[in-house]
Image (cartoon, helix red, strand yellow):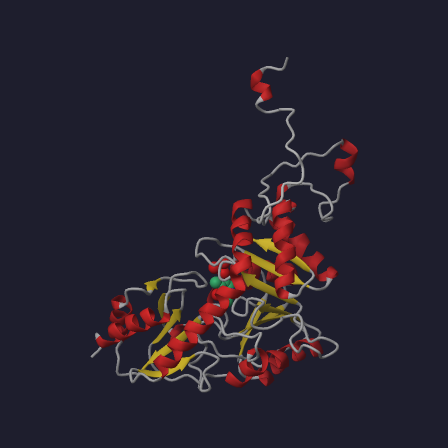
Length: 401
Ligand SMILES: *Cc1c(COP(=O)(O)O)cnc(C)c1O
């Protein structure tokens, strides 16, 4: 008779197999058992037909990886603890001292900070290119260039680049192109098949996604993915990912798995309210410019329309306004503070609408000619009724008078 202490740990009961329910199970582990020493020696951590260690994958993370591949149309997926970790691990895996990385000037801010900090310290140089001028990108590619980051639409200012032309330029030069696909989310366009029906497919090499945004949908999970189509490139990224010890917790993976089934519906709902509110703002006298790729006057609208302006397309849940220069920074701060339903906070993709004022001058090489002068405020539209959000905006704007 085994001591009860031991029986609490080694119990003979095995639940019946075949449990089937809407959500896949949540498997948690650091240690994974091998049936024998020879199995331990034989199993390859890279081989997803077996399990070797929690960090290298569990049924929960494998399941999430496969579903994200389906979302973005890729073949392989790595999970990392945040969207920024996805950006960082791509750069760490592909760049060496002496290499250069090109980044669009309207890229996600912390991606630029990584280039100006760690990458620079390690002898990796960077240059920023004009996202709205493919010729500028082409001119900046040199034999040192090993990686080009792309983003559509751009962070904060939401210009929509000629993504297809940018990808063609990278392909022609033989440099890796990595897309920050958080805005498109796999729903607005297909990153590995930008021009459906055109053969050979026009495709980015790598798509990273801040799952923190729409795939999570709750404002309560941080996670990122790195999706590829080429096994050799995936292996390069995977080896670096393993050596850096990056992994995600099973409970977080479960949260994203639970949100994925509603993601396309949520994306469409965010999109519809955002367009309504952006249009409303475009009629208001307080704003010099409203930035939203589906607005005909927004920079890069034609590129957005060509890539995302079909039934399957979309425009996510973000827009920005530039206040007329007569409104001071403190008046604009007062407007943000006066909002009730919009909360002041970073990130997007969750149910609650958010507002952030940005100091654009400090974020760019120079003020882009396609943007009006003035204080910029970005809105992330949640899942509240658009009419209530509009009333909230109107009330806060009335405090400016
Ligand atoms: C939020 C965001 C990220 C980073 O995601 P985190 O999970 O917050 O690190 C990267 N790129 C874009 C475009 C984002 O909006």
